[in-house]
Length: 272
Image (cartoon, rainbow, N blue to C red; front, side):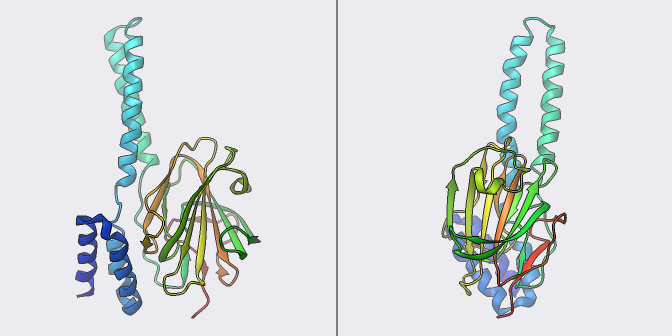
C-alpha cells in the first residue's frame, strides 16, 4: 500500500512537473508517519532526474562534434579525406567515452536513520573545522569541505529532507579548487536547506567553481521541497563542495576520508 502510494506520487510528478514540491512533501510526511517504508520511498525518489547528467553530456558532446567538424573541414585541405574522417570519428568516439565516464550517475544505498546528514557529493574530505557561519545560518557550525577530482561522480544530492530556503549565486575568483579555502574566495552556488518539521535543522551548501569548472547546474529552485538523497545539481568538471552543519550535530567524518554522495553519513542530529 505504502509502496504503491510512493509510486503514485512520483508518477504524478512525472506527468505534471509543477507538482514536484507538493508530491515530495507528501512523501516526506509519509516517511515520518511510516519510517519502516523508507527504503521503498527512497527507491522511488532515486528515479527523479535519473539520466539528467547524461543529457548534459550530450549537449557538451554535440558542441564538441561541431568543433571537430569545423576542424575536419580545415584539415581536409591539407590531408586526405580518409585520414580526416578517421581522426574526427576517433576523436568524437573517445570524447564520448570520456564524457560518459565523467557525467556518470550513481544510485546509493538507503540510509536508515532519519537523523543522519548525508554527504551531498562524492570526493575526499580535506577539511573539518569549527567556525561561525555569518551569512545564512548565523551560528557556530562545522564546515566539512569535500574535494571532487575529475574521477569522481559530479552529481550532487540533498543532504537532508526539507525545503530549499535560498539559492544564490556568489561571484568570486577562479582559483584552483584543490585549495581547502577556495570556498571563501571562489565563485559559488549557495543552497540553504531547512527541515520542514524542525526549523533548527539546517544545512548550507556551497558548490564551488574551480579553474576548469565552466558551469554549476542547479536542478531545483528556491522553495522546492526535497527528500534526502534526491539529485539537486551537477558541477561540470573538478570542484569542491563545502557543507556547513550546526554545532548541535555530531560530526562522524574525518579529514582524509573518502565519501559517497547521499550514502556516507557526515553528521547525526541529536534526538528530538
